[in-house]
Amino acid sequence: MKGLSYYIPAAAVVAAAAVALCWGAIFIRNLIREKRGRTACIKCKAVGPRAAAYPYLFLIPVVFGKTYGCAQEYLRTHMTPILSKRQIPTGQRACRVEIFECPRCGARQVEITDFLQVRGEEYAKGHYAFDYEAFAPLLEDWERMNHQMEVR
Image (cartoon, rainbow, N blue to C red; front, side, top):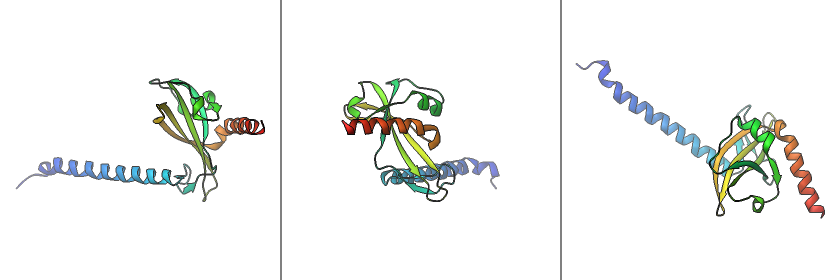
């Protein structure tokens, strides 16, 4: 008769496989949502559509392999609006900001993708979701800049 400890390694492998399978399913679900322009609300977890038809672009003073601390505070205080990827200097990172609105609770949030552009390809360095209100002034600055360029 085998003791309970005999089955522990097999149970650990099964548990690890179950966790990996769940994580993979969540990852794939989020990728599909992102492709369809939808995301989960950070407050109530309902799935909501993108509120703006276009992404906002910002430069950040971070180069190739450097990192920064508290993402929300750093990005909020260091992002500079730009109108196109052509304005990104070689080796410098930028952020794409998309706005989402929850159909259930009405909360708005921003999803920020920090990326490095290399030979036309984007390499994501971070992906964050924050409340809209903290980034509203930056998005308004971008809108004003975009409007001024359209008027010219």
